Image (cartoon, rainbow, N blue to C red; front, side, top):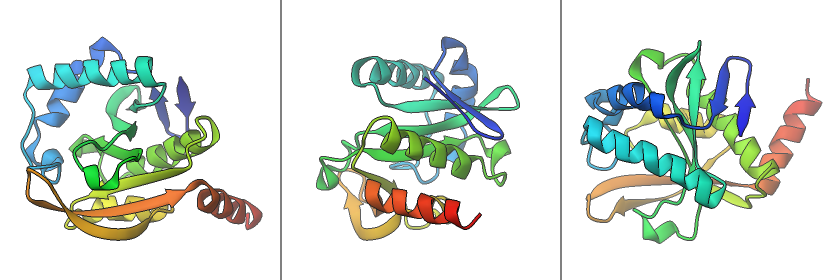
Length: 183
C-alpha cells in the first residue's frame, strides 16, 4: 500500500517510525485539540504504532504514515471513531503532523490523496471527520477536501466539544469531476 503525491509518500508503518511518532505525540501543541489534549509518552506511541500496523493487517484500511523529504512528517488516513458512538457506524478520516511541518499544505495534500484512495480503492460510501471547534487549521483542511459541517456534539467521557464534518462518495466524485473539467 503506497500513494505518492507531488510532495508526499503515504505508506505502511515501519517499526523505525517510532522516534518521529513519539516526538510528534509528545508535543503539547500538536496534541492540543486531540480528545482531552494530553500528550502521549513513548510507550503509548509504541502501542499506537502497533495498533496502526494491526489495523491495516486486520481491516485493510487504516492510517498511512506520511513522509515528506524522506522523513516521517505525520499521518493521514482512516479509523473507526469508537470514541464517539453517536456517529457510528462510520469511518473517520483524520491527520496529525509534526509542528515543524505545519503551514506547508501537507495535511490537505495527504488527506485528499487518502480520501480519493478510500472512495476509489476501498469503495467507502461516506466518510466523517471530527475536530475540536477551535481547531481552525483542521477546519480549513476539511473544507479544502470537500467535507461539510453536519453538526456539533460533545465527546463522551472527555466533555470536549466536537464538530462533525462529512462527505459521501457521490459528492466527492462530483467535486473532483468538476475541478478536473475546469482545468
